[in-house]
Image (cartoon, rainbow, N blue to C red):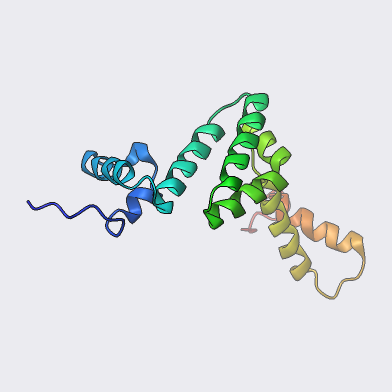
Length: 154
């Protein structure tokens, strides 16, 4: 089997994937690309991405905070504009990212509740009283069983 020359055209998905999920051949190609092209911005961006992944795997919030601050400083000094945007976003949301690193909780539950409330508002259209909308929310989100009242209820 003939090997392709080392260019960044054939390793796009290897650069995007988690290194631990790469096949041995893809990992070897990636290592060769990174070793061969340390001056190319794509290779440096990949290295920054992997550093950020390692930082966010930590659980100590003081260590995460200091490493993120150092990472942002290094990235802002680089000439990789998309990574600079990521570093600026991390600086703006540093405390939230550090809190996530400690708890690993997202706001998915709150978004699901918001979806239920929006659905209830659509179902209660035409009703202007808050108590009516609240009743519709309880009917939707409460998962009430009406079988005791009406055995034919679904």
